[in-house]
Length: 351
Ligand code: NAD
Ligand code: TYD
Image 1: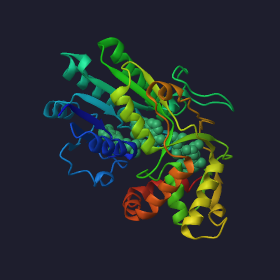
Image 2: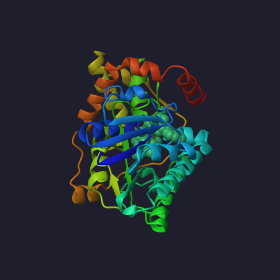
Image 3: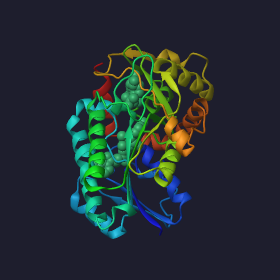
Image 4: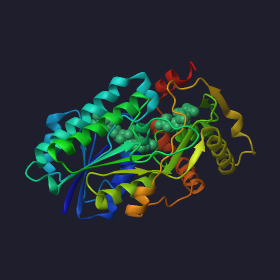
């Protein structure tokens, strides 16, 4: 094997798309998927590639120092693509410490393990950290986040991701490890856990349940199809410049309420419901505390330096996403049984 690439969080939403892409595209890379399988991790996401000769899975928590060391020793890990994280803003408001443990301490634990394992020659190894545009805080009506926008995180989630980004930087400056960070906008697509806006609303539309829009619905996000994010990660991992940060975005801003109406229209068409049927499910609910008004990424650096741009339009991506959810109702039933019901009740019934 030319590289032994450890992908953390590979059983999650974005991680599973990255694992699949790299396993299929690089038979000479061994892909080691390390994941604790929290509520958000699901090996069903990778059923199609689990027998591939260049793929292995390790059920490991990034907080477990000894287990991490063992994985690095066993597989002679040469590079890391780090996606494992607690990733949902609403959960971070309820349980901030979970985010401190996994996103900050877990990342430092992983950095330490990589540093110790690679110390003979850091130039042969890359630690690639996957982060979010939410570290930059909130925009007004105009402007974009660039790679030099100062960090101003507003939620416990984004604060924990910002902190992990700073630690990656510190390990580069202090120990001279080769690192790259990318900060991406909101992803959507197949295998998305139905607690984030798009998959939650797809699930609720299927079941004709209320669509809880926070506040005035005028909040804006920049949406990117998850497979385009995976392609960007592949490109950055193989061709990105160590020491650099890359912003990744869809050039695709939507106000939540407009997006929800589009989703309702597409789903009514696909489900054979009359026009306007699902829009009646829209219900305005109490706002999220500290809710960031607008995110928008300026992705010109990755476009100009590495030639990346999104390959699908939003309507195409959304349509493929809905088709995937409608064709994978068993997956949806599995992830929304048990603990999910409890989560849903506590999050939405008192709003
Ligand atoms: P996700 O919640 O779907 O998946 C996270 C994965 O990490 C899960 O498989 C989970 O089991 C695993 N995990 C959690 N805690 C762990 C621990 N302590 N040890 C080992 N594994 C653990 O998240 P996602 O949406 O796929 O996001 C992946 C990464 O991309 C995160 O770092 C997130 O901050 C970042 N990101 C996400 C988005 C987005 O829109 N979803 C946008 C930009 C950046
Ligand atoms: P989300 O998918 O949680 O992503 P993030 O907060 O990381 O951007 O939310 C996207 C937007 O949708 C955000 O402005 C909050 C809003 N939202 C709702 O209006 N209702 C909901 O039930 C959820 C989950 C999100």
